[in-house]
Image 1 (cartoon, rainbow, N blue to C red):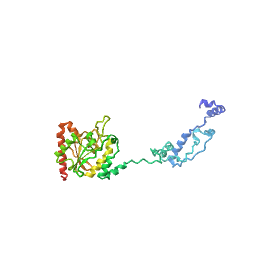
Image 2 (image 1 turned 90 degrees about the horizontal axis):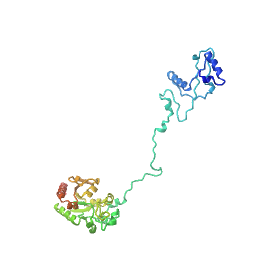
Image 3 (image 1 turned 180 degrees about the vertical axis):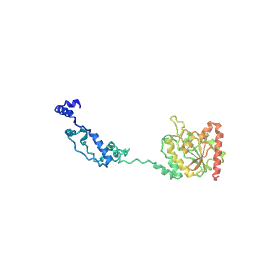
Image 4 (image 1 turned 120 degrees about the vertical axis):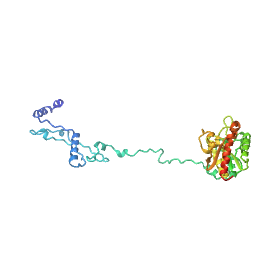
Length: 331
């Protein structure tokens, strides 16, 4: 017997007497009593859900065994106190094969992930903005397209230009040569490929059996001259190309050429949609496609003026273009 219990006021003498008679009280833990009852019921009969039991006063937790009866023969387990389950959770049963502690978890509240919207319910996702000018450009004829380019202010290149450079040549040509953009001479005269680079291009055309304005059309990726802060020529930026490319696309649709020749890196990468780090040497010697049209890449005439050793490679590119043209059946 616990010595502290024996020394409790008003209880010690009674406990000593019971101990002397060998009929001490039987103490039963509430949770062990419930566990034993459930195990016994699971072996014999299906057990119905446990009904809530009213709390028992502390004095009734343990009762002494009657005199003369062995204590082990009449164990009396006091019914444990059960708290009523919330209405949203069914009472656990012994035959469902699930530990009772699992019933305490609210799986209904955690089974579905919580989706947090990235915008208010009243605010619909913004639709992609489409440039309304693109549809207008795609429907223009030659005269309207030329006037629109002359008045264009779709990018900042318009701020430093003298004249726009629309293009020149046969509007029903089988050959379309596309350069990068106007230089100083082109900006002053309003015509592509004039000056030394233009004369070299004319010689290249003559070697192919065509002339400027006869079965050949010459245009650029951008229609205004790109310059740096020092006023020197520079390649157009991706934003400038994107603003001006619809004009060239409409020119291609109106001309309907047989073969396209890209003169230089900027023209090739802009038409093929490739990364700016792609060198021209990786694009040469192959017939590419632009909107189902064959496209051959070669060096820009201005580059050939600085690198005379590559003129032979440029001639090989022109031979590939002529072979492609002949295979089209439109020669």
